[in-house]
Length: 303
Length: 300
Image 1: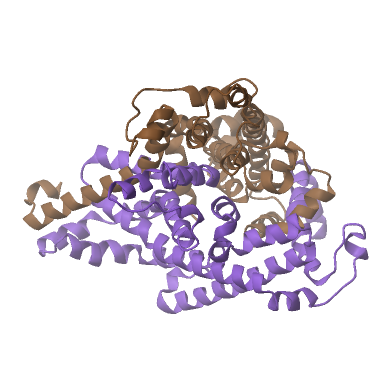
Image 2: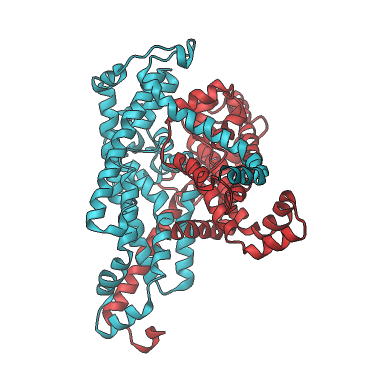
């Protein structure tokens, strides 16, 4: 047995040689950083290096618990990602259904092509578009507000608007791209189902409610479970491009906070601990969502 | 077909009308920001001063593009870096991804599922930003272009897509080639590559967009202004008050006291300069992306 395995490995030696650098890459850039979460339990200093830096147990976590900045960032992350889930999750489903009902083929294709476009833009570009659109002096939105006699609002610097901006920009970026997978699922539905529903006198809404949606239910549950892993997570790039110091109070999120603490202020151990605390919380959320999904719809659970 | 047989009821017609109207509004809302920024970028300074609302430029004025793309503009550094990332990066990523996928597609490879798991595991667990940063720092990659390529070089998801594709190649072709005395290298170059051109194009495009949009890597690992990729450069232009440091031509004009163009217009021209390449290419390559995402997601 051992000999034959040895033979097999020898036979495939060229393949192993080809893949060896890739394995090394995964170790260096994924597995070493993974073990790097141990930094959260150390007092890391660049001069002492990883192994020489002393263990400090849960010091940084006690720090976190007593840090108002962490709680602010955590609260914002939870609230913003929750809003995002509520608004950006159903939107692509609705769009897919609407596209499916659209009977003008070219119009449909044009809308699809346009709606996928924002997915390919970086957050820097999107924030640029927002700055131009919302600028208090010459921004289009404020020009309209002023035209109707209102007063210009500096949306990007107003703390009360920042969460809405997070959600709207995410919606604008993701709605079209998100609809692709649902649309692909809808096209697999047997058209005979619709035919018999029409003969039974079902209108459009009844068809959608009783045929389209149930056919998608397992996909929807599955996607919902995946998205719930995104609770407690707001992307670094979006935050970095969206918030400025006046909007930190309601807009600062964990990923950006980790960057400021860890990279900018070089509190490596503290930054790692914050990141770790956040991932542990989101893993717990994912597991909970999966359990709930299993109860509701067995096919929808991801494990 | 059945739609022709059964006449549409009034309710259905209203539904379709509304449906089309909402879809139209969505398309409109997606394009509006681009339209506004394009108009801003070509409107003469008077428009910004005197018009209540800029919907159409009173005349086509390309002076802001002259400032942004003029001599001595720092945008060329950013273009250079991003062009390098999008070509060299894409090439490296695509080559490594294909080789890895090819190896993992060998059904009889010992430890095959273990190796796959080893890679897939990293899709769900990561050490987070700081440990990754420290690794890059330890390897002395800070402030080099390689910091924006190597750490994100392999997309595990892309690799799995490619592997599934290669596994779909009929075994007879491989067998025939082996009997004809084809070596591994010959197999990759003469058989696998020609068959998988289409899927390599899709994955290559995924990588190209990823590199074109390089942002986090540029923020985390790059301190030198000369090495800023285009998107980080754009962020820098949007968030600083004085633009004349970056646009030499603007500085000279202002020194001569000739004029000060509205910074919104210069920003708009910068946004478009960073976005137009992708908008031009997008309609031609869009269908490959859609194919990529549907194949990957529905087949698991």
